[in-house]
Image 1 (tube, rainbow, N blue to C red):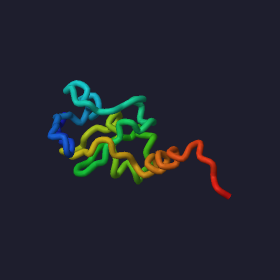
Image 2: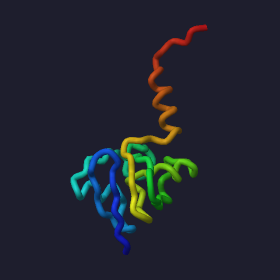
Image 3: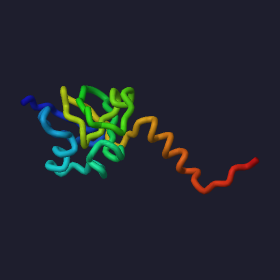
Length: 110
């Protein structure tokens, strides 16, 4: 079992996490306020941009293969190296959904 350091960009917070634990579980144990909801890799609430390092997250079904290279779902992700993560950053697929959702209820001009 290997232990890695995970730094959270812009917060000054850091945790240690083994390659057998999820990042979210360690955040919760350490009292770090990491957003989450479903805990099964689908809702993307726990998303973080991978600034540096690598994770494994085979059950992160909410991400495309390309997104999984740049984003971690902390509820599923296990570190494979020391990491720097930017929490609250969402992959392009959800950013697009959020932008579209801002117009819900709007009437289109013809």
